[in-house]
Image (cartoon, rainbow, N blue to C red; front, side, top):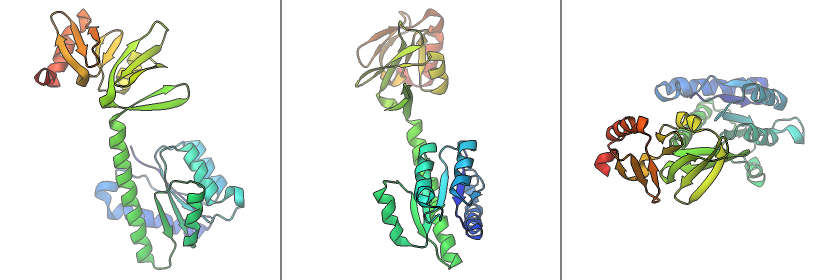
Length: 260
């Protein structure tokens, strides 16, 4: 996934200069970053930035914002950062300003930021700071991508819940249409979805029947001939006759029989 970059400064020349610094940083480090970042989008006002956010709905973008946007208290850089955080939950936010004492305001308003850059006339130093910031953003995105790959996400109503995959045991259908029951090492949780969708979206699941997906890492015993598996929580689940051969093949390919 390529990450969007939005530069917002109410000075037209300053915003373009910042965008140029970003472009230079990507060119300098093209081996890693060219495949990660899209060309920077430039906005010169709170409204222009928000309009772009609402139209394109980016996820996990990098936002380089002038904290001193001169557009009133309700549409300054801090307000824009809060709006960014609202519209892009995985945003990485960088503030630029001519006043380093403004940094304390980000803490007072509890705006989590990746970096804080003080504008300076020395172009070489400014370029170096932008290079450092993009490198930091790149590494932060990589860490979050790794964490996400090890996390199982599901929604209960409008609230998203996350479980480390190693703690997830099984997912079963219930008597209520489209309601599933997730079993983890700490208990059970119910939410609306389908096994087909969950299996498609999360490749760690192993389907053993039309009503059950299991995490192979939590299989304690398996008997293909009698068609059942015993899970780490002590539950025994049947393997469908038509899936037995496929289950055996997948377990062999994953080295699970060696582990057992």
